[in-house]
Length: 42
Figure (cartoon, rainbow, N blue to C red):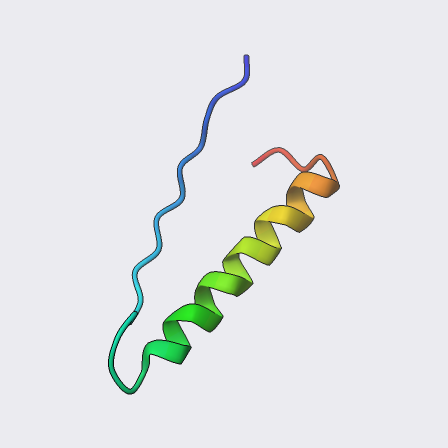
């Protein structure tokens, strides 16, 4: 059976380190897209 997996992310979104949180979020999204494209089941 298929299940929905929710992935949370905690990182800075404001202030002088906001770019680090966004970079981390983008990396996670890219990894998820890559796994989905390869039909990897986690």
